[in-house]
Length: 374
Image 1 (tube, rainbow, N blue to C red):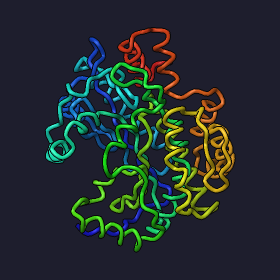
Image 2 (spheres, rainbow, N blue to C red):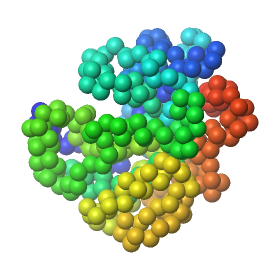
Image 3 (cartoon, one colour):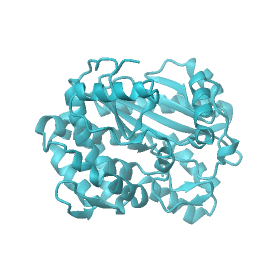
C-alpha cells in the first residue's frame, strides 16, 4: 500500500486518546463489558469518539481536534462523566493506569472485530498480554518535513513522557520494581521502538516503500513506534504515556507535549542527529524502571544528571510557549508533582502499602477517575 500524503492540520492542534480499564465492583478484576459500554455511550451526544480496543475489558476514548489544552480537558471531562454514568448502570467501574495490577492475561477475550482477530492470529498470546492501557497524544504539524524533524527532536524527551505518566508498577499481582512496566509489553512487538532517522518526507517515503516491499508492513498502523507520523491526520503521535489515573493529568501531559512541540518548531533549539539514539534505549529503560528517580544521559554532551532536573530545565525553556498557548496550568500541575517526587506509580504503591490489597487500590483508583478527592 502506498504511503498517503501528509495531510493538513493546524500547527500545535491536539488530539488525545485514552485506553481505559473496565472492572467489576465485586473484586475489581477486569470485566468484559466493552460492548455494553459502547451501546450505552452511543446513545449520548458527546465530543470525540468511544471505540473498542484489543480485548473486551478495555475501551478507548478520543477527543476531537482541539486547539488548546483547556478544550482537551473539557472534552475528556465530558467523556469521563458519561463513562462513569454508563458504568454505574452496568454496576462496573472505569479506571485509569497503565496496567491492571492483578488481572491474568489468559482470561482475557479478544474483542470481536476483524483487525483484532487478525492481530490475535499473528501475535498469539501477545495479543491478550496487550491488555495494557496507554495515552496517545497527537500534535498538529504545518508540513511533513517539520513533522519528521519535530518527531526526532521530541525523541530526546521520551524519558520525560514515560516518567511523568508512569502508572503501571504492578503486573499479575506483583510489584515489578518498574514505574512503567507497561512498555515492556510493547517492546515485545517486532515493529516497536524508535522511528527510522529520516528528516524529510521523501526519505521517509523511501523507507516505507522498502518496508512494504518486504511484505512485513501493510500500513502505518503496523508500526508500534514510540512516536510515529500520522499522515492521514497531519500529526505526529506520541505513544509512550501510561494512561493516567485522572483526566486532569492526561490534559496536563498534553499541555507539556504542545508546549514542547511549540518550542521545537519555533526556537529550533537543536538539529537532531542519528547519534542522539545511542543513549535512547538506555534513557528509556531508566525512565521505565525508576520514573522520576531515573538518570538521564544528555545525547549531545554525554552528561549524566537526574531526570527530574532535566525535566525542570526543560519546563523553564518552554515556559514562554506554555504562556502563549494557555498551557501553564497543566505545566504547573506537572512541575508541582516533580518537585514533590510524585507520579501515579508512587500513588499506587503508597495505597498498596497502606491497604495490602490490590483490589482496594483499584477501588480507590476508580474513585480518583470519577473525580473524587485523592
